[in-house]
Length: 155
Image (cartoon, rainbow, N blue to C red; front, side, top):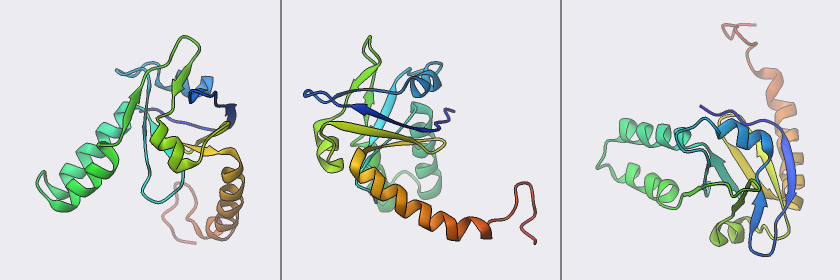
């Protein structure tokens, strides 16, 4: 499964095309779909993305946790999977950000790609600065209380 790290800001052209950072493209290049999948998160004003395997795993988890005819499963599947877009890269490594997703995330002239492990986010660059500051404040309080790596949670 793909793993996304770091933060990159790229220009968005008038058609809504943006260059996907080269490390992100390299991460998905060996996938059975060598592109990215974008979807709207349920709780943030950004776009989230991943490789196709992440969305397949999410779908499997939804069916496993809820069952195929559960109303909660259907709601989450509809909210995330039904609105997802599979995007192939053009020869310059760009994708066309869907207009509805750009609108929700207020992305117009620049997009900040934020690698957060198994998935990534795409933010309006100014909105990301605010979000990042808030996340750093939460992390400063939360991180010291996390168990050590490989530890049993006992201090």
